[in-house]
Image (cartoon, rainbow, N blue to C red; front, top):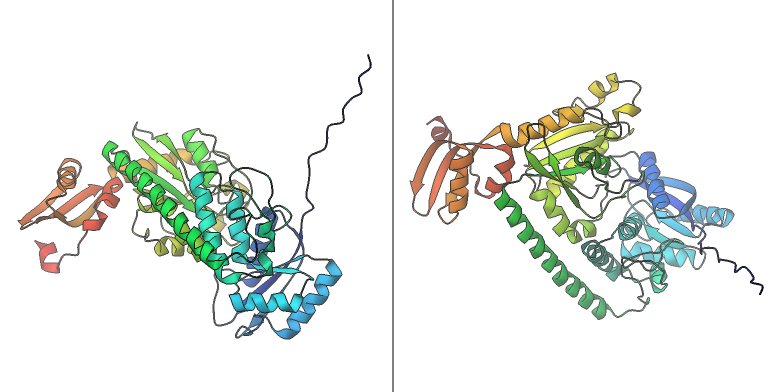
Length: 450
């Protein structure tokens, strides 16, 4: 009997959609990054989303054009370049209003689709959301952003692509994951209904996380959150300190869902270390709101490790961008250790002392080469267990566990009992600062002298 070999079909591949980038700088709205650098970052975002960048242009304006944001002459120039380069997608490096998006769609007709930076970031987040919580958060952000922008730019949501984790649709040839399977003319009432349901589901996730945090507090194991600009090396650092295998890739937003690992410190103490989503300039407000449950992991941390890619030409601007976001989510008062990562990529070490002199208390490491990690672990242990922070607290008697914790773990300088509460002055370990933060008060100069 003769058998014929069966040819195995090759996996289906999609051509990378050809994208053209448009940068805009408003002279009265200063940005952390120069226009050229912001466009370079947008190009990396496009590549992460699976797009092929075929060109770019930019325009500096005093005020945006009320119809097309950029000037009408610039629109005609872009139309000619799009035709010459056979571009299929225009990506603006700003967030377009619904009116600007509609007008641009009309100007370009069926020649090319138009999206903005926010749409692109939402797509990348959707690609990297592998847990139910992450998928829910991205879906909510996409729906809230999409609701006022029901134009032709969203027709790709009607196409369903394969894959798990709720991945459907397409920004480029690779698919816009998230809401998916939704027609352009979807009823606004149905979208609002879905948004309401998503918020309810995320509230359940938030309550579940809160229960876990309460359990962690009872165990008195401090939590350290790794924060920083996207692709700064947070996941690599977590792997090095915890001997774990968190996914690492040299791309923007390689890690989206938070990962927590137990880390043993030099003197035998332990800490829980959480790798959080990377920040980026112009982070969409929809994402900040939707990822509230995830960002609370940062707010509840006892210590932040701010990882800075010191080899990046815009490292200082990236540090400032993260500082701004931490303040936006209310995490600016948490103790922090600033870490200059990737020093192995620097040829001139003097650059570290001149460029980053305004960043307080920096440590120099290479997470990849495991250089400087011993000093970092010692600094973490010192901040969590050995450094005492002065505090002034007004704690209700109903919080008896906290009062007992202060007497057990801290140093009481003065205690004043009043009706319904106790005022405590003294010192507590750095790891407990977050627990007592809600009861922190400012004392008058006369009280402090006493």
